[in-house]
Amino acid sequence: MKKLALSLMVVVGLAGVSALAVADELTRMKDEMKSDMGKMKSEMQGEHEKMKSDAKSAREKMKADAKAERARIKAEQQQRQADAKAEKARLKAEQEKMKADAKVQEAKMKADIKAEQAKMKGQGEAMKGEMKGVGDEVKGMGTEMKGMMGQ
Image (cartoon, rainbow, N blue to C red; front, side, top):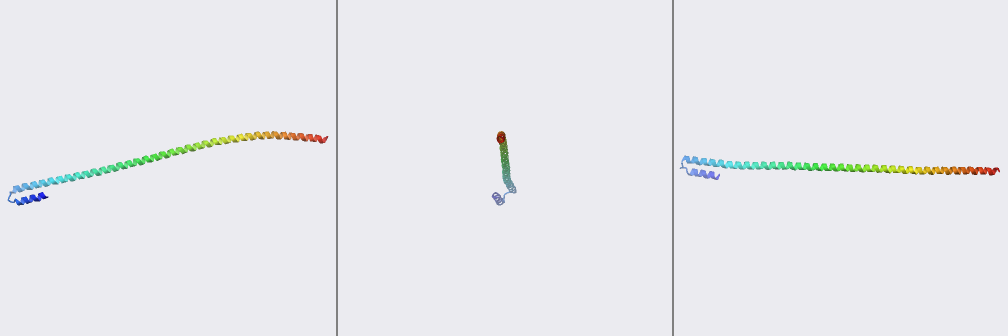
């Protein structure tokens, strides 16, 4: 703008200069102004493009960060599911072992009971034999007593 003002002052000061010289000066000033405006416009366009580029980079970074976060969360969920599945399998195996142990214990108890019953049956048979022997003895004694009394 200073150049423009100076140029006008020069033009006014040189009023005695021919109209052709004034026209040349005005054309030159017009060209300078166009040139300055073109520079300013290209600078503004450059800044605008840089801002657009920065904004796009920021959006892409945010998208990448969000995608990475989703992937991390998904991996954590899958790990928790795998851990839960492993724990469930461990508990099931433990339960199966307990069932098998209970069956073994039950079979052992049944065998012990049968052995005890067989032992008791044997003792019962022995006692029966003893009782029969005692009964026979008592009969024999009764017969002897009759015989003694009858004499």
